[in-house]
Length: 610
Ligand code: ADP
Ligand code: ZN
Image (cartoon, rainbow, N blue to C red):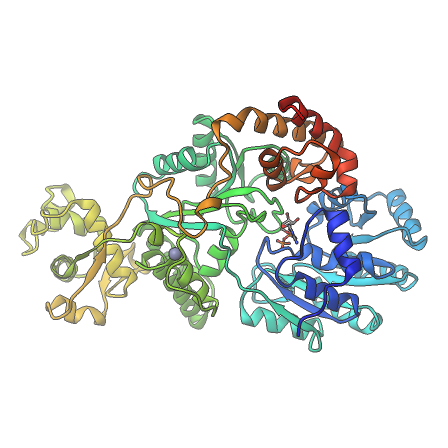
């Protein structure tokens, strides 16, 4: 049952937002909300959730109330709407009494299109009292997964939002999130009383993100190589596990000539706010961060997310990589990992306070993550299947699809590795086991008399790197495990017996150091692989960017609030030279044209003979 697109909604989309058509389910969602129906929207990052509530708020009479936990973003959101000619404001703890009074007066006068508010503020009796005097068009509950007590982003204030259903039964409510899993969805429905809501669940694929996962070799070199070859002039996020690594990598990237800023919970609130602001406002800033950085990074043009340490679950990986490419333009999720990640994460889980059941659950999440790393087929398929979404076998836009993985017969190598673990009594880590296999002659070998083991020196046909790869794959496939209580000693699992006895075949993947593969381009979206600017277009492109930057600075907003990269790129491609042609560019509505159109037309006419 599909609704006819509401004509008023369509005209707002075109004239105010400057977009030609609704995407996928947007038209339906918007029509439902306009008709007063409650709605639940599960849509991936970048899917276009904001329009789903902004347009009903404009079509219906009254003010739209947007509930969001992200206070730091409210100013930018409100500024962006102001650039479209809308009257939006926010109520949160950063405002002075005078500012609050002013906003309350505007609300009572019915002059506000959209009000952004944090949940803790909303449930105060003063606010509820104010709201009861207003005509409200819609309640939009953004980041609705914050009601989930199991999730990372739980906010207790969200639990009290059920009050809206009771106090404002006639106002439609829309809950929105990019979280994909079933349990969270159920919790949102239960806690926000959305049993009767229309539910819109989009696919969670992010086709514009290219997934690439490889082995750690020389992390600093690999990271620099990746950025230089793929995203030399782009914004990106580099995720690491520890504060110390954040500092060290931010410094290294800076020394290499990038603008790289650290972000972690150990820095003062001022520094964090400053770095976040520079990331949002300046071009080409790289944030090196722990997972403390993330929630609500609403920057649409993050071109890459790099993981130099392994996330502990696919949920975390999906969420973190999802911060790339909200604007739908090609972006990269790049990760390298190694055996030491597995040891480290296993140890962390072992040391955590949870009970055994909790630890088992964490462990199986890590195993799923490792399976994604080691898979020889399409990564997108594994990722989406994990969220119960079926998909084809070949996405054409992940490393394995682009460069099929080579495998080799690893049965003999595995036998040698396993018997070395056995003969050294399952008490040693991978480094020492490899020393035994290669017949090294060091202190530790002598100390334990390991030169006398029957497996001493029997692995010289492979180099240390390949042995590391063998051990890693044996662990990931469950033949070996890491004893977290015992300094990462490697132990045999029952399942390894047939392998050890030479009764089982084993194909191993040939590792590729990710620094060698680069600049690959996919078949499916080959045309869109990069916002590639031809050499000849570069001078105009730089002028357009400079114009955007100047206007953004004058207006005191981030550059993407003036125009997105996608809009700027269309300008470069079509080179409009009058108002009509300008309004045909995606992302340019009437108000934005009035504010910025002339300046860009001047830049463009300078370049062409209109
Ligand atoms: P989400 O909140 O789901 O992550 P946003 O609402 O920020 O996504 O939208 C992502 C990007 O897509 C924004 O730049 C937005 O302006 C753009 N967008 C949304 N809907 C449309 C549309 N119908 N046509 C063109 N661009 C759109
Ligand atoms: Zn693929």
